[in-house]
Image (cartoon, rainbow, N blue to C red):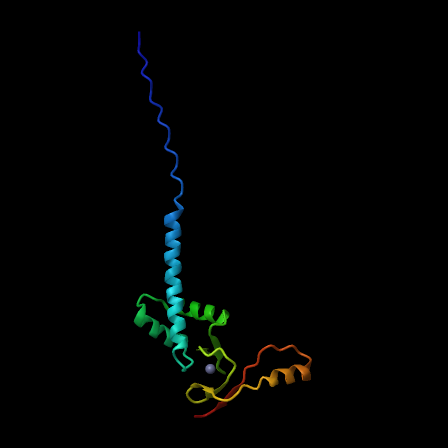
Length: 150
Ligand SMILES: [Zn+2]
């Protein structure tokens, strides 16, 4: 007589349920890092009246966050500009500068140095209205830049 030994049935362990918590945390951490970088970039642009280039902003951010990449700085500057938190000033040569002053204002741009200066003085809001009346267009914004040598 043979005694059958019951072969223990080894049930495969159920696959561990994906633990969402760590993933979520990683995402949150990454998100925090991104928002920290974006905040820092915004702070730098808001803290200067120099209408900086992305390269200048990059140099400043690196002092605070050495691991930041130029691509990240470019991406965040563009996101901030798309969100209306900063604006872009596009120079004649196509180079882009960033401006923390989002209110309507005039610029003076030096054709020698590329320096961009905010001009004091009230922005003539009636210009838009006059333009729309005259052309039948529906312009919603207007940017005026004066060029000359400083
Ligand atoms: Zn400006």
